[in-house]
Image (tube, rainbow, N blue to C red):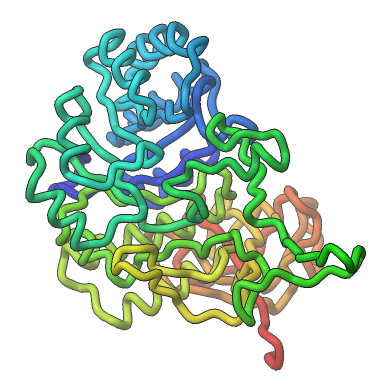
Length: 413
C-alpha cells in the first residue's frame, strides 16, 4: 500500500500541484486528486490530463501513490467517455480510480481492467454484504460511509475478504446529507453536488418567517451557539485514531481538496506525527494535546468525532462559526548563516513570535528580528505579499517550512 514498513496509509487531498507537493512534503503516503472528468469538485479544483501526468510523475518519484476521483454520478452521455477516460488514466500510471457509480465501476473494469478501483464514500457502503459485492466486481478498496460506527466497521472487517482494503475519513468537513448525496444545492442554486458543483448551501445562514408577519425574520437555531442548522461540524478523529486502526481501517483520509496549502500542510503534518507516534509507541496524552493544538491553528468549524461512537461526539467550542488560532504569514525559501528568506503571505512585524510548521520538528518558534526587504534595507515589518524578506532565525528551520503567527485571543496581549 505504501513504502513504509506498516500497512497504514495517510491519504491527503491535493486540489492542485502546489497542494500536492505540500501533502507529499508533510508526510502523506498517498494523495487523491480530481481530473478533467466526473469529479465532485469540478468547479474549483482539479488537473487536466497534462498536469495530471506531471502529478503522477511527481508522486511516483517520491515513491507514493496517487488516486483520481471519478466519483460523480453518471448519466448515459458520460458512460462511453468514461471508458476512454479510464484507459487514459491507466496509461498515465494512476494507481487507482475512486468511483461511486455502479455503472462506471463496470465500465472502468471492462475498459481498463488493470486500473485499481476504490469505491467512493458516495456509494454509501455501510455493510459487509455491499463491501463483498464491490469486491466481487473487482474493487480493491472500499471507502466506508461516514455514518458507520467503530463496532460496525469491526463487524464488516471480520466478514469481508482480507484483501479488500478499508478506507475511512478521519478529518475535515462532513456533508450534512447521507454520505454526501445532497440535493439542497441543486434546488436552491441550480448547482448539483452530485455533479461536482456544490454551492455549500447547507452552510448558509437561514431564518424563519411567519406567514402573517412578512419581513420579520427569526434565526433558525441549532442551539445557543449557532444558527447554521443544516451545516455539520468538522470531523476530527486525532485522539482516537488508534481505535480506528484497531477496527480494521488501513487508509486514513483527510478531507479538503478545496482547502489552502497551509491547511493541507497543517492537517497532514499532525496526522503523520500521530500515526508515527502510535506505531513507534511514543504516543501519549501530551503528544495528542500538542497535535490537537496544531489542528486548531488552521481554519475549521467546531470539531466533532463523527459517528464512530454512534452519537456525534462533539468537541467543546464557543460558537458555530469558523475558528482559527493562527495566521499563515510566509514560506521559507532559503536558509543561510542564521538568516532565512521568507516569501511573505501576511504581515510579519519586528518582534513577532513566529511559529514553524515543519515535517521535521514540532512546537518550534523564534522572534522575528533584523528584517530586511529584497533591496537589503532594514524595515520594521515584512508587509508586501509575495515579496522575499530576510530575517534572523535561531530555531531549526528548512526550506519549504511554513510560518505562522498565533492570533491573540480577547483579553490577551
